[in-house]
Image (tube, rainbow, N blue to C red; front, side):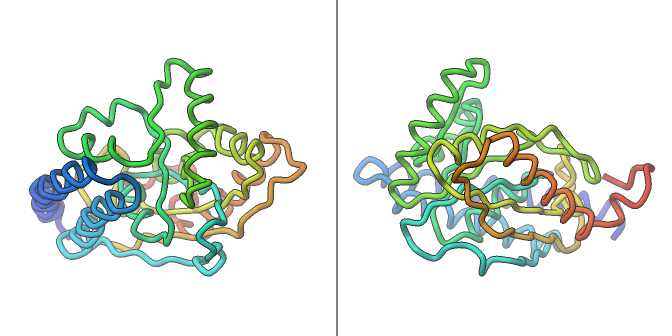
Length: 255
């Protein structure tokens, strides 16, 4: 695909998201006045499904999932998902791929985004002030335990922010710390989304994104830092398997 065509198709996709988010956000806000929890969540997820579908139809971004059968099926069997983070795509796609409602841990500044932020502010999510680390951790521990007791799965990106294709961020132990504290298994996930939606870019490229879900790792008797090292090793090994071109040489690939 020519660069110009990719830009044009991406512009149509961005407009598609901007137009469709408004009615779904308004519906979520109205419904949340009367009821909270799952009904509001699935309204929002309907918009995410449209977005993932739009990326496929408009921009040619497809995906395939491996390991979904490893996830628990019991409604009250919580896990903490710890995925690789390369682009916006996985933040939109993961809720549509999972059978349980997901509870994201995210910076509170996202709440100020018109419509999108207003809607997620009505969901069972954990929004934190990163400048207040102790307060943020207490909030994650308290609300994480509360939401998992309701059947939600907590999702945290260990690297904190998006990384470039072929690069590795610093894996922080917040997710495994929560897992050890609550006795919850963790699930490592590799995702090669930067192949199609590069970090900090609004230009999407056609291709196939691989999502590989690992086996849940029990946390009994584990230390948070040591557990995170295991998660990191698994994810980074899988990244090199599903996107070998990005790791083939020190030279940067197109990101």
